[in-house]
Amino acid sequence: MLRVGGAARFAAARHLAPLRCGVASAGAPGAPARNMRVLVGVKRVIDYAVKIRVKADQSGVETDNVKMSMNPFCEIALEEAVRLKEGKKAKEVVAVSIGPKKSEETLRTALATGADRAVHVECDEENLEPLAVAKLLQAVVASEEPDIVILGKQAIDGDCNQTGQILAGLMEWPQATFASELNIADDNSSAEVTREVDAGMETIKISLPAVVTADLRLNEPRYATLPNIMKARKKKIQKHTAEELGVDTTPRLSVLSVADPPEREAGIMVGDIDELIGKLEEDGKI
Image 1: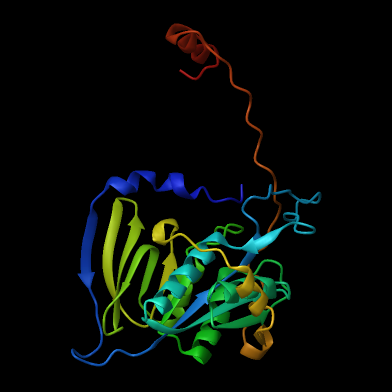
Image 2: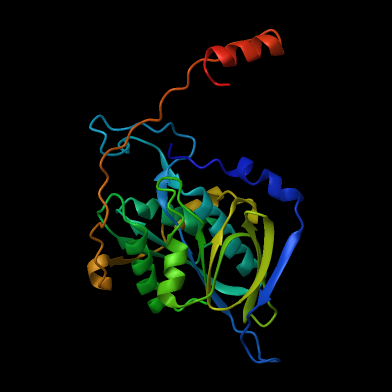
């Protein structure tokens, strides 16, 4: 109930032609390209392969003694940022994580994967709401002054799909959500983004700085190598707290209860169409 069924959701979109949309760009023609700084959000979540267990009191899901890892959509966002640096489009990749002290493990994974620096905003709240996360990211953006912010389109724990959009609104920046392809202009003043929409694929052009959220087909994340993992352990992580950044993270929503989805009844085998119709009529389905 808390997982994302990613690849199947967009299978039909693979065969649809891209849709071209309007253009918004910035930057004077012929201006020299600036070296970009990319800010990437990475979240610590329950590993996608772990079976979710609901707490006995139905207040949430069990996280004690459960394998945690980087949110898969954040892995895709990080990979895209590293590729921009490898392609000489960016000079620096900064990874930021908001959460408890153990979020440092996720940041060290980001450093081992290719991020240059890491920023940790430490919060003890177990489930930060998207508005609070966006406000904390806004404070980090104001300090780091990135040219582009790349986030996963959603986290597989809350499935909110709101943080990127809220951050763009707070910053009054352009946004491109559900990105499956990202191309930065030669002068680094704009980006062309192909994104997932209900009708198929849409290609838009946005001015930078901007917020982009990554979808499944944007890329295939790499694995961190052992030498890089060892190097990442020695790197410093810049630390902040919500209080230092002046952000109130008090929840505005209350979770009344969390429950497992109802178990599906076992199916039955029928010999032919007539028997199938008879069973459906018997059960009042037709």
